[in-house]
Image (cartoon, rainbow, N blue to C red; front, side):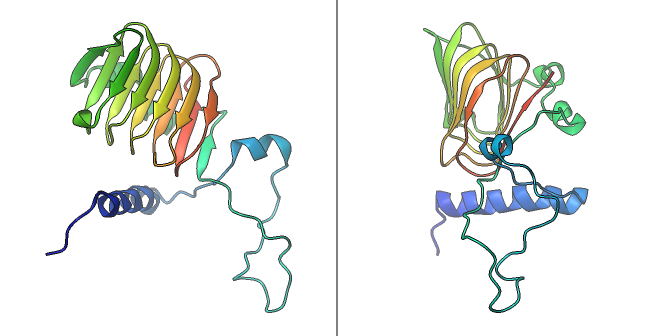
Length: 190
């Protein structure tokens, strides 16, 4: 019998999570790099890939693809619904308090809807496939996968290189964001 590893489960979940919404919604996905967006204009026509170019044709310099991350300046109604604190608060399965200014959402809270209260200067999310509601936070670090996170405000949001397909929204302020991982999306909620 083949042993199932965390990596194979993660790969299957990531693939299903990325493909299913696209098939069901008929939407397109834009891959953007927030840092590059500010310094370079968006091209008006698609850039041909090496596989679609004519044989022997030059496709320009070898450019590595941008990370699959996105920060939105406009609040999408669908995202707003997913990150509606009032609606999610009614579904909370675990109420917790930050102790000594820090908190960790552990793997034991996978799939749960958790709300934190208190003074949270530093929060680390290890859990996956759940929802975390947070008050004002200094540093928010996300290591889990497929988490929806609503934070009142944050000074800094950091995605671990292994953190994939997370959705993070903040209700006020403008946090500094360090992107890593795949398909992590951030957005203001107001």
